[in-house]
Amino acid sequence: MNLDWANIGFGYIKTDKRYVSTWKNGAWDEGGLTSDDQITMSECACVLQYAQTCFEGLKAYTTVDGRIVTFRPDLNAKRMVDSAKRLEMPPFPEERFLDAIEQVVRANKDWVPPYGSGATLYIRPYMFGIDPVIGVKPATEYQFRTFVTPVGPYFKGGAKPIVIKVSDFDRAAPHGTGHVKAGLNYAMSLHAIVTAHEEGYAENMYLDPGTRTKVEETGGANFIFITKDGTVVTPKSDSILPSITRRSICQVAEEILGMKVEHREVLLEELSDFAECGLCGTAAVISPVGQIDDHGRSICFPSGMDEMGPTIRRLYDTLTGIQLGLLDGPEGWVHEITV
Image 1 (cartoon, helix red, strand yellow):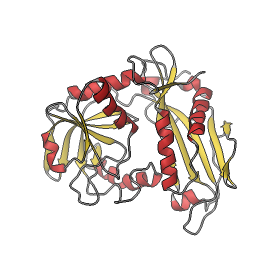
Image 2 (cartoon, helix red, strand yellow):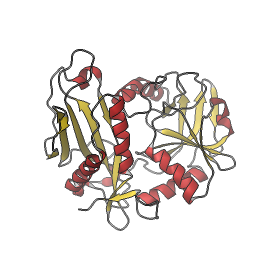
Image 3 (cartoon, one colour):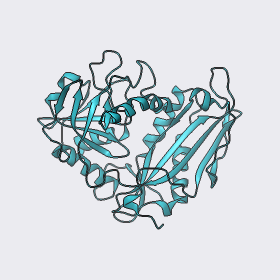
């Protein structure tokens, strides 16, 4: 594939094949690969009227020894089942989810960027209600689809710390859908992120919707904090999406690096006590945060605005080292795609 891997950006590029399976008359059909990237549906399709849709995001990498792998896809499969159940959609079986990932990556193997390029193959499984629904109720027909697209390195020229703001908006409602990967959660965050960008910020920090005193997450990533004594702290809440990257970082910290880890409520008023801060997710693994602005008060972390803090750098290097085959990780984390 003749692409400038370092400069393709983080956007959609059509690849050769995608996977499609349809739920109809109470069962999923056999499913399979197609070269057709277009979807035909009724103007009254449930997804268009009532946003009945959920999705996942993961990546395929080329390791240092030339293998094509994905990272913990079993957790994506489990999380999508949870999302589907919450949205009254028929869960796509976990084993079939994993098979779909394998089929799509294998069929698009030429689009997997080479080792050392910084680029990866982004994998997007998603599901939606497709039949016409005008009354407010779940659809009766669904499609599960998976496509892939190569994406360039998230950080060009190094991971520079960003400045974020405490948002005036809520990301999720108490007892709502914040803990599942529903499309509607992201639609609700669009106005807030556009507003933040217009004000010169890279991201929002959302607080708990009940008391607005506790840290939750950003529009698309979990927070990770490092205390001045080197403890890893991640916010705990029923309305936070359970990030696979965050869970992996915590396990790396505790089991491989021998660090203390706390998954607990994090109060807004204690942010100035931390030494480092980062946002963790599939796209960047960890994005360092140098400053948080809270309505005229600036919280500047001792790690500074020039580069990742030393502890977050250690976590980032260890996790990406496992993903790229440079380091041994826990059994089952790296899933090889045979091509």
